[in-house]
Image (cartoon, rainbow, N blue to C red):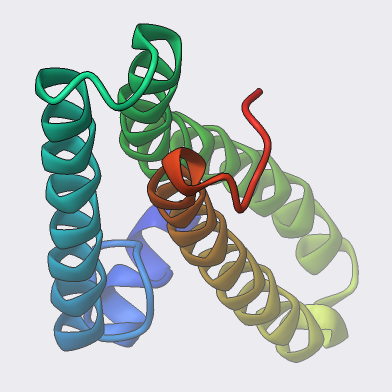
Length: 140
């Protein structure tokens, strides 16, 4: 049985993003709100000609990156890495059955760390997109 059947969906009751479904919904709702705000701000600045098309494009690009890369592809990559880690850990558990409990905590620590890391990265990219037209952060 792979890590996908044991962790975190069935253990924590979620679909691999954060610990609970309520927190997952909150993260998605807040991310969607920040994304919508950034896109509306970018379009408003473009229509009012208060900013350059390059800056507007960067704002929309950052919103896309937050969803596609941070929320999607990086998560998929690390889930795949967790599958590889699970295969290697199964070999160790078969060779040394006493490692079952410690490896369980390593799994949990791995999932929790990367869930928090990706959530933080997701929000940082979205906030960066919002702060870009105000000169608080530098364009890429």
